[in-house]
Image 1 (tube, rainbow, N blue to C red):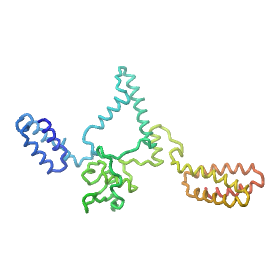
Image 2 (image 1 turned 180 degrees about the vertical axis):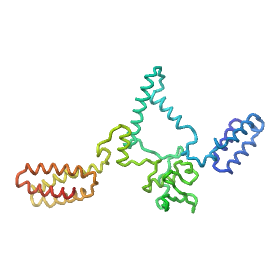
Image 3 (image 1 turned 135 degrees about the vertical axis):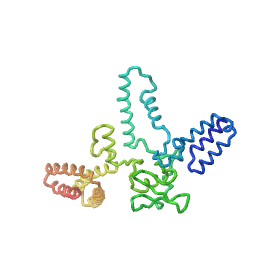
Image 4 (image 1 turned 90 degrees about the vertical axis):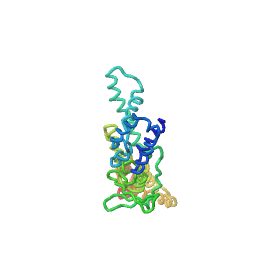
Length: 311
């Protein structure tokens, strides 16, 4: 009897529209175990007078981000008890303060550093199911005049949903409260829209997270992608090839010059951040030219001119 009443009231709590709510209400009130329990009916009447506090139907206008319970507070306390304190009881107040200020800070530093270095991948979930990132196609997304995005429904032809990127909400039933839905994921994957539910991870953003975690700024190229760092190494390789071409035989110079042309094209496509390293490479060649013999200076000066033009 208790399970039947519990399941019937659960349907009442999670009703998505007025028709489902009325149907669940009638089903609960029709139960024989409900009709024979006067205390239950009295408690039920009190709850119905406060349905705006517990019914999902009455909370559709609230930005709850899909969380209608106090799970955030419970999860934070679990982390503090199990991870920080290790389920140990502390009797010394000074020791407890040390755990709070030292252990808790180290935990957050580790989490932030894992996130900004992509060690902890952000997985988009809806409940226990992963949202399909490719379900919403790029052709189904269009941008309105006021900056919002319009996404076509995947199940009902002719129906569209509006994505508000400023508040990260969608007009679909799942995204009205700010919860992540497949339409928000589609806009995030196929467009360059910035939404705070999907934190951007550019080089500048990683430097900001670095300051938050460690208190001091990182080096200039610390979070630059490996592909950009490889361009820096390409500059030094080009200088070596220039010097080798000058000392090679005429037959060898033809093939080596083609290799140098490939590197020249790679340097031309480098980002502005690479120019700092390019300038330092040019300074090294300047010093080498000054110490070289007159015959070698002619070929090395031409190599320096190429780097000057590239920088």
